[in-house]
Length: 131
Image (cartoon, rainbow, N blue to C red; front, side, top):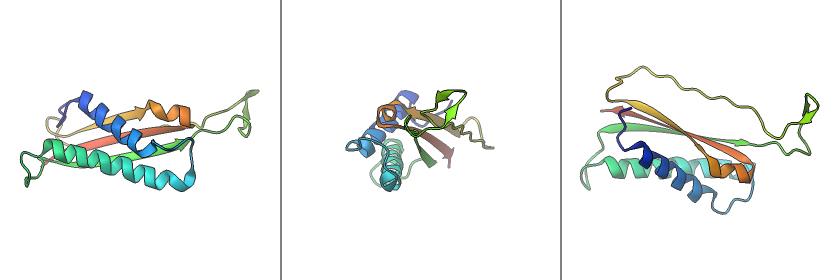
């Protein structure tokens, strides 16, 4: 994968953004999800732009698209019964496809593990397209 920053750095940027957004959250709260997503997306975009710009007034050589999805876990006490066992989580599958230059453009997906203990899954996708 040709990434504008290393995948190790992408992982750190995404983790830092999630931790900043959810710092005071104890559990899923629908009223806060929009703000959490905005914080995650804007923090990631600022980091990517900052790290891939060559000077203080220059533009990065990529366009970026960041998607953040927050999924609430079902509480076991209110969850439906499936096959005789309580279901404590919702199912989800997400996929992205694109047509682009494989040598210059790319996509990276990430699941923030810190959301589990707060009753949610956070899945992030970062796409870059060379200018």
